[in-house]
Length: 266
Image (cartoon, rainbow, N blue to C red; front, side):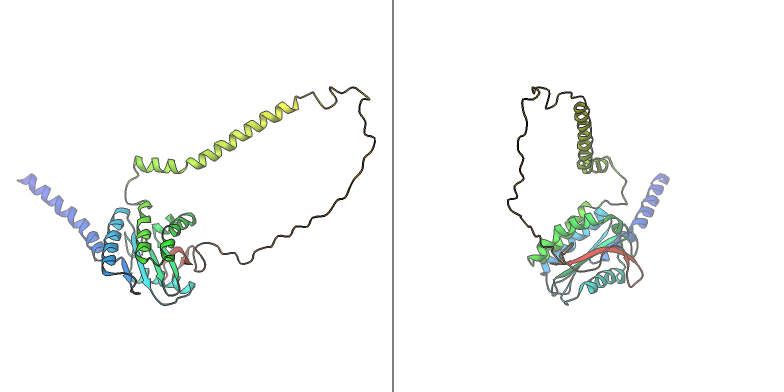
C-alpha cells in the first residue's frame, strides 16, 4: 500500500505541474474575425486546427481579420499590439508565437513573430510562408488563407522537444543541394586544372605542318558596314517582397517587446 501511495503522489505532482499550462492553452483563442470574413463552422474548424498545431509545435498561432483600411505602418502596430496586449507566447507571456493580421479593406497583411519564432522565421522562411497563404488571400478565400498559414507551422521545430534522429536526417536532407553545389564546384576546378596543365604541354602549333613560304597575306581591308545602338530601359520603383508595404525585420513594438516579421499587400 505504501508503494501505491508513492505512485499516487508522483502522479498528482505530475498533473499539478502540467495542468496550469494545459489550462492556459485551452483558455486561449487563436482565430479572431472582426470583419465577418468567416462562417461559424469555419471559425470552429480553424480554432481546432490551430489548437492542435500549437500543442504539437510549441508556439502560439494567431490569425486576426479586420476591415479597417489600415496602412502599412498601422498593420505592423496592429499585429504587434494585439499579440502584446493578449500576452501570447507558448512558454510564457510575450514568448514564442506568430500572428497573422489581415485587413480585407485595404487588402494588406502583416506577420508578427515573437520569442523563438522571431529567430526561426528568417527572410527565406518568411518568403516560403507568404507563398503558402497569400494566393488564397488574393482569391478572397479567407478561411483557406488562415488554414494555409496554420498548416505551414507544421515545419516549425518545437524547441521544447529533444532532437531526434529524424530531425538530424531532415536537416541533412535539406543541405543536399548545398553539398551538390560544392561538389560540382570542386569537380569543375579539378577538370579546369587538368585541362590547363595539359594545354601547357602542347608543342604543336599552326606552323607545325605548314611548308615555309607556302602561304602569305597579299591584301588586308577593313570594311565598315553599319552601326547598331541598343537602348535598355531601366525600371523604376521595382517592388520587393510580398507585394508591397509594411515594416519588417526585428524591431521593438509600442509595448516595448521584440518582434520580427514583415507585411505586404494582396
